[in-house]
Length: 586
Image (cartoon, rainbow, N blue to C red; front, side, top):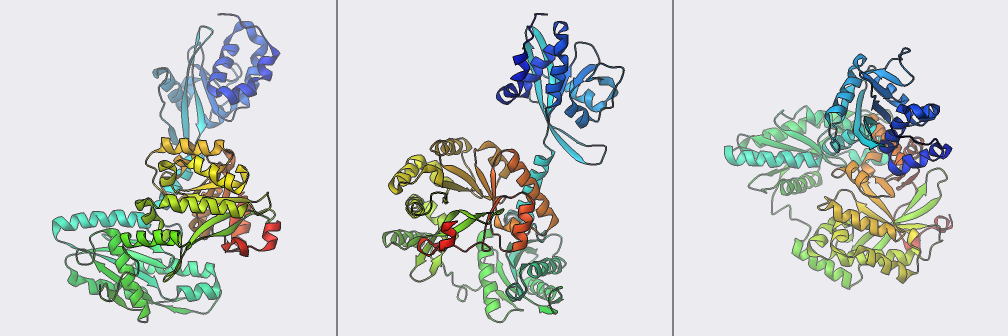
């Protein structure tokens, strides 16, 4: 075996080597040192370095039925001490888990990817470990082993986030995404079998009254109880989802449309109950129902939901506790067609009808304002102030998103340039903008025009958007960060592959969507946020909680380790000229 000259600097520099080259290369070198008879004096140092790693390291010995395991691996694999073995070594045949790890390492070839290990440990807890193969030649010696990385919390968080996309955290009902999937399946089946499909929308008539008089806690209790009552009247073949703050939807499949009035009456009866909250007197609850029939009122899930919602609004306007079927004469669509909307957006840009409002972002520890999120509003001459959710989709289809994006970017930088230099401004950019335009050049032009430092600008990318080309988006984000501008992942947890985006794209900040904060009182949501904050801290990403409305929410988030927040508790969106002086001074 070749000689390696002992060198004190070898071990002084090992932490740097671990950071630079990864645990695999370091483990290989250390094993060579450990097995070398000429370096007996360094074995203790090698054990110290491997023992300090948080990842488990298993290295096969040259001797049969023997493997070296660092302290992390011993804990992960549940290995018992073996006094008759050299320090750190264990017999492979005495542990089923160690045997599986070593067998996989021996059978694999260099470059092979090992499958993740998933098991229930001795304490009954689920565990998930990523296995990385060590297969290296060091000074003529072949080193074989495995690095075990504990991914249990990441796996659990990913599962919870995926579940939150399919199940509403507050009520446990399906989400709109799952509703549309199931409705699409029902429509396909109905086309073959001649069954009748309908969308039923149900609203809680007294929700707003209870929310305004008693607050969110009793109002959320009402929603949970209403969901239970309606669910009890839903057949197993149908699906109920929460599609709005106080709104549910049921996709119903029947033999024929003649059965729909009976189903509607069943839902109305289910919504008639007495609600008793700890903070007030009993309230009689009722529901308003709107129904849209497939074929007659629409042929897609989105259209059926839209028209059933319109019919439900008419039922509420008529006094509530009643059902209305969609009627094209009575339920005129108040929004213009896409082509008309696009023309109005173009006109609004030409007439200067778009404006930016700013909502404060605060540090939870001090409650000091550290920046603002810029929120676009369209001051429509007929419909009043319109939020972006109602026009961004049409703007993306037409290409007007670039003109709107330029306006938002330029105006936000000009406004922020007048603020104290410690304050940052966050501007939303769509994935379409980032993929289809020269975003870095536009950002630099806006910064130069406002004479503002790049570090004062943060670009927020909406997480709900599907990303068609992850590689191109990664390049765009890296170029933006190279400018000194920070990048945030907005509405985290509401879109597709949340953790995948966080792990594969270089973000400086993630923003927890407001609906998770709203449901913070539920143990499942609280657990998910706690794990998310811990994971974000581990990878060096700042967390901002959106939609904070109560002091209790702010306190709980701070206790979970969340450092920043925004919401009505700290301030509502306002024009730059109307921002309170104390906020700017902070």
